[in-house]
Amino acid sequence: MTRVVYKPMSASVQPQLDPSEGALIDRRLASDVKALIAACDQTGACERFEELVKRHQRRATRIAYYYLRNAADVDEAVQDAFLKAFVHLPSFREELLFELWLTKIVVNGCLDRLKAKKRRDRWMIPMEENEHEIVDRYRSGEPSPEKTLLSKERSTQLRTAVNQLPDRQRAVVVLSRFQGHTTGEISQVLGLSEATVRVHLFRAIRSLRKLLTSQAWLNPSPGAPRTL
Image (cartoon, rainbow, N blue to C red; front, side):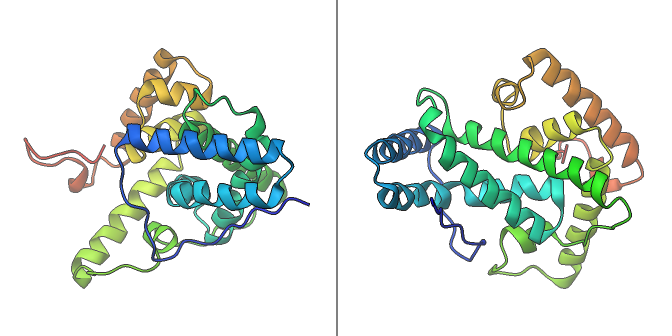
């Protein structure tokens, strides 16, 4: 039975690469894994695929968190996403971006989990946990207690507001504002036209500003960068 090794997030962080350079590395790794699978070398394929896991685990975890908000659920969702990616990698077209392909798997998996959770246990209240405690449990250079408290308060307010959005609007906000994807990339991930993506984003931001209208940090002084 194929076994893909997945480890919860640790202190190690992958170095930041130029997007085009990262895409080339992903393409090479995916090609190597496909070749090893075709040669029936499952052990070699899993070992090679672990490099893709290390490169994208942090980002996949951050995306899953915005949907699930629970450390155990996030870890399971990300593990499932990587397993599905490994199983279906032979059908992956290398001219596409592996990052977007994996993102689509993560988003769809999280949406499926949310639907199942609503049906299964509507009465349960998810455990609250700060995003940074899930995505990066070991941090250096901790901010002052005052800044930490304010950051947690803002994160909680924004997370609560985002979770009140319809599924599509929430997906577009997460991928656009929190993950930095273009409307073209989001349209590939969600299977929507770019025009539809822009409409969802406009409506989502309008709704968020209404929900957070009393928060001064969302409306900074002129010239200051906006959170949304």
